[in-house]
Structures are given as structure tokens and as C-alpha cells.
Image (cartoon, rainbow, N blue to C red; front, side):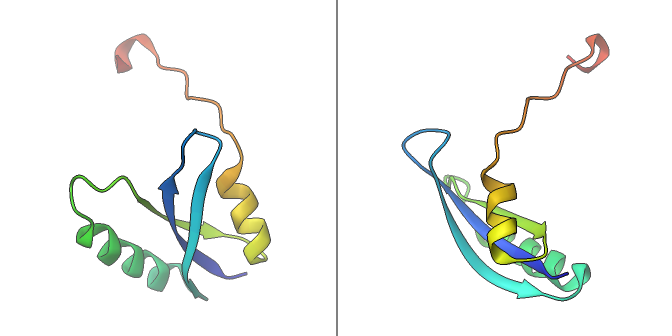
Length: 79
């Protein structure tokens, strides 16, 4: 399965984000290196996120990126 690299731009609400596929790789190492270079090039005031997603297809990768995840539970020692 390939690795997809996406740029996620925030939308008007948390549920509406713009996904832009930047590239696709066969190995994680190449995808990780590409994503790190892009993240380093972002300005500090840029709201975009760069994510690497492992999925069977482009549609599956976008579905995984758009799904709502619950916030992690903070333990007392993590606060």
C-alpha cells in the first residue's frame, strides 16, 4: 500500500478542512523525508498541516484524515 502526503488547510469550521494531495510514495522513509522538508518550509504563522497517511487508495486516505477523533485523555501527571 502506498503512503500519501497531504497538506491540510483549516476551513471555516473544524469539520470542513481542505485536503490537498501533494505526492504519493511506496516507502515510508521517502514520504517522511518529503513531509519533513515541507514542514520545515512552512512559515510560523501558516495554519497548514502536513500529514503522511498509509492507505490502500487515495479515497481511503482522505476518509481517514477527515474522520473525527476523540481527544486523548490527560492523566494527572501529564497536565
